[in-house]
Image 1 (cartoon, rainbow, N blue to C red):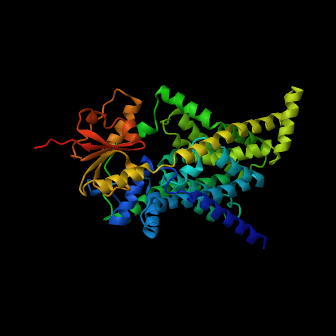
Image 2: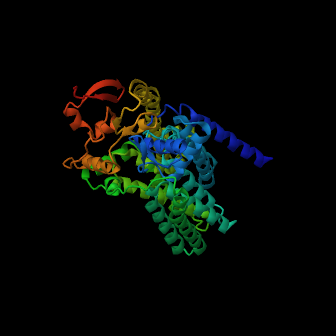
Image 3: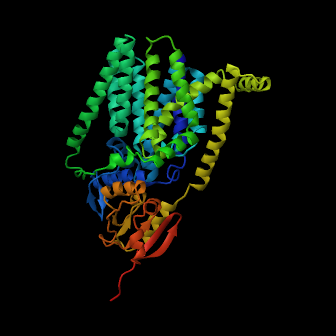
Length: 509
């Protein structure tokens, strides 16, 4: 009876979270560039039976969409529920809510019951940037949702190594392999984590744990290498070959420009101070543990290594113009922030924390309990109001219909075969007109020019002979169409929020 009540509570909580994540799926956040490519491929797959994009109304190779599992599930959702933004995003909501359920359970097993409730407070009320907040990022057609579900699922499976070792190892390996496929960016951090765990367990002669982690990692790597080949064979005849793109890794993952490094430091100190404190506390508290034989001990270390390695990469190498890169470690690292707050408030006794902090300040003497309580209260006072303000601003002022309005205008107020030129990928999902966009290699060149302004991009916006041009955040920010607009080849026609629609100026005979 007790177990049935527990599972009923978990199920009810899952449904409640799913309802929360389903609110305004078609509006919040507005569709954006990264998501647009995945949406377009998923729509083409549903409507034309091909895993491809469209270019000038014809099938074109896929390229910049999320990994196959994410696009597949978005297409499956639209196949059942119909083509639409909310229908496609539902897969992200389901995956994210499932990942949160596993993370809640894992936190409960690793840190205790009250820490698992602190986890929800940290995730929803102490994450100060929308590109790191689970409610915004977890509702979109992005690879992070699948990554988090399968990654957390693998760590959860490893909890049961003592009881059913090879079933646990096999489950973890399969789940981790799919996680690596879902977001290839994860691969180096995952293997750094495995090497760290295997080295640490071997050092203290916990060779069974070393074997378990090694076997799970080897299986994950096998799945990561073999499953895409199987999917490629399965999709033969239903997709087009990818066009090679060079330099994307250097433009996004290895940027040594000093200004980028200072910007990364600023992002972490401004928006991730609770996360940084939580990770530091996690390493300190792990060093205090005495039971090195428990799998929970090693899983805590593995999660710490993974989160710390990812944050170190963002600080030292990543293109810091993309705060979204901090989203996965922000979600996983929330359990360490939760554990820290749970310990510092003595299991959610906020009144006691206020009393201890006040007594220390009045006495003007540093006391360990008072300092911990003061730290917890300061982090809450900093992060909670900032997060609530961000949520209010994003929900009230960023809930726009601009992309819908642009597509509706072009779909209804232009000729059926009018060609639209744009680099706003989120529009393509809604357009029923032929559209053209710069090649994927130009995407790399635009990123490089943003880092190194002296570089030039050779793209002819008139090569496809467009009738209309739409310039939004990405086209404007990367100056994709500045040159062609300066020639007078287009004239302003309509504006919807941040989108400007231009009509082609053609010579009259």
